[in-house]
Amino acid sequence: MGNKYSNQWHVQHLVAPRSVVRESIMPNYPWLLENKLKYKDIEARLKALKAVGVPYSQTKAEYDINVKRFGEDVAKLLDTNQAEANLIEQAFTHNYDGDKTNITEMDAMVAYLQVLGTMVDFKKFDDGHFATFR
Image (cartoon, rainbow, N blue to C red; front, side, top):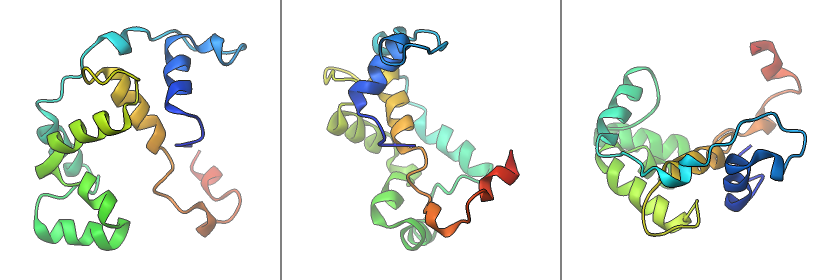
């Protein structure tokens, strides 16, 4: 679940998993801190995801639907027209990897991990509901 652990915990877990979870069998991913994130094609990537059902918006009408469905803050993040600006602002504002000098693959990975499960109101579902999809 997103926001269960701090950004720093996720960074440490990805760099050296056994340093925070002794029994982990996950490999180390230290290069995520070193590799700059390639995001110049972010708008095209979001458009591709939109084609397969992710609710990104390209038009004012789609944006308005997302405002009603998810709220204005989330709708802004789902606006493909502002994709690059949103990514840059989010990376520098949240400083996921602790380095404000550039945007790394670690920023993207931690941002992704922190949002998992945060857009679903699990109280709307009975216990075991999601187990039927396994």
